[in-house]
Amino acid sequence: MGADGNQQASSTFAVTESLRLWEEAQRLIPGGSQTNSKRPQNYALGKYPIYASHAEGCRIWDVDGNEYVDYVNGLGPISLGYRFPAVDDAIRAQLDRGIISGLLWPLEVEAARALVETIPCAEMVRFLKGGGEATAAAARIARAYTGRHLLLNAGYRGWPDTWSAGRDPAVPPDLAKYVVSFPSHDLDKLASLLDQHRGQVAAVCMDAPHSDVLPSGHLAAIRDLAHAHGALFMMDEIVNGFRLAPGGAHEHYGVLPDLACFAKGMANGMPLAAVVGRREVMQAAADALISVTYGGEALSLAACVATVRVYREQNVTAHLWAMGRRLMEGLDAAAREAGVPFRCAGQAPISAMRFDLPSEQVAPAWELWLAECAKRGVLIRRGGLNFVTYSHTSADIDQTIDACAQAFRVLRDAGYTAAGGQPGQERQLAGAVSGRGQQIGL
Ligand SMILES: Cc1ncc(COP(=O)(O)O)c(C=O)c1O
Image (cartoon, rainbow, N blue to C red):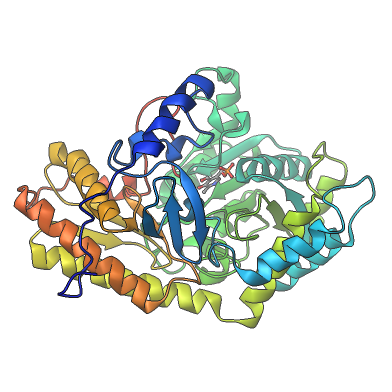
């Protein structure tokens, strides 16, 4: 901290070891990383850390020894904070018994029970490992239950072929006829697609967009339209789950989907995903070809049981909302004071951010701001989403706001002060990065 209470930029800040590893990674790993949106080109290459050394609570240290308050948090899975004792103790206790076996672990039942008791639409549960795997499984369940093949979809559902025809030339283009996109805010368009494909739609699938607050009744109207056409309503809660509320957007907005997918946040970082839903619909999974060797892997299930218990016993989501609001208000005020056209949008536990600058200035402004924040000990992701955790305290948020305010002043001094946003930019907030192989969504 500086004498004025603000975070000072470290004069020795460097990411030398990160860059050395990144150079090697590009020779060994196609694309350099396993997650497209973690590629350093999406942040501020050369001026932002790439490799982590260790993490604790809401803080992370890079391999060059720099410490940061973290708002990226694995792109969402860290919901309680790094190394949260109740979760790590549960993982350790299970590690002493074993990781995976040919018998089923009681934890499969315990974790399913925990989700059924916690998530409003969950009557039955199937566990998987990744979010995309869960959405692909949900699509199969919907198709098996309805005997129909067409999906109407709004948003990013992951990389499986089920969802990526037309988005990746390697996916057989014929598959595109089984998934028709609709804009999640456009009820008329959805109604006309359902009419046009009468009797063919298995499910209407969507997530609640993170950079918007949905109008009241919107999700219920989508569900009712789906049901009126004999289709299921499937919600992707992979980002919103265990953030807006444990049950995600459907709990927050009070609408029950037939199927819902969860992943990030449900096991505080351990690789676990789930499809949950109405008993009658979920029963279709018993005979469908949905089977994964690692679905019953016990360390992740133990982490899930412990995580859900913390959510149930402590008011985790109230904390996420409070810290998220404090962050949004603080960043907005700091930008205003510096005269930089920037603002936070969307839901407080996962706020998005935008610069309302002339379009050619937006990318360089992000790069400079992220680099200046990193130099002052704060890790932020381009566009957001800002993943606050149960471990972020008011003091951490205030330290962040001080650091970000200084970074805004650097932007002001560099001339990023002229308003000039583009209509429609809002919908690109959630980190969309263009180019083949780059992530859409998270
Ligand atoms: C809304 C949404 N659905 C699905 C996925 C895919 O999840 P995963 O990357 O775990 O496969 C993501 C990933 O960020 C997502 O944001």
